[in-house]
Image (cartoon, each protein chain N blue to C red):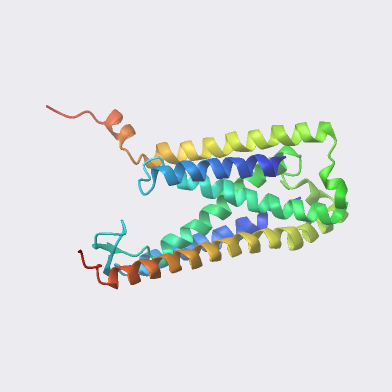
Amino acid sequence: MACFLIPAAEAIVTTAVSAILKRKEKEPAAVEVKLDGEHTEKAVKLPFSAKLKWLNRLLWGGSALLAFEHVWHGEVVPWFPFLTAAADLGDAAEMLHEMSTAGVAMAALVTGVWLVMVGVSALIEKRALKQAEEPAPAKE
Amino acid sequence: MTLLISVFAAVICTVIWYKNAPKSEMKTGILCLMFWGASIMWLVDAIFEYAELGADYFKPEVKDMLNDAFLGLSVVALGLIIWLVILLVSDPKGVIKKLLFKKKD
């Protein structure tokens, strides 16, 4: 009915947070990594604000496409009160229940997937840094 | 059906993104995340529907399936349009800028 509003609300918050973080973040220090697995080169780590952008895009994109689905099903209309369920008290209660169950679950799962993405990227970064520290094998 | 179509769109976009990475001239990363975001949300929707309907969830009426497929394709079209607008506005290759400004000899 209006479950997409919860991820959309989270998207507003995360977009604001990433904008603030981007302004506050300092230029990341260059580190040595082997991007091609052989040659060591200088590179900078992706800042956290850039990783937060992944979550913004997941949330905004998903919410936009789900909003379209709700328009398709006649649950969202271009006139006040915009949500057809909001016009009736019984429907409004059902809508709020759906937002608090499916909507919250959607936002939580998207955030969970993003956390996994951040975790995996941190592991890849760690592994790349470790590889760069290892001495090159002696050529025979 | 909508979930299935959006998952396929997300997978195809991810393969295209990986093939062209780390270059992001076409900004396909945005398209990937948009379709993945929608797919995750529809997955939650599907889980809730399955909890309500049980096995009947997997036996949709032909009419409903057709409508869902039509919706899925429309969603993909909308996603592509959003991506295209972002691509043209951000203009990472400078194509629009070159069209608007002519070099002075």
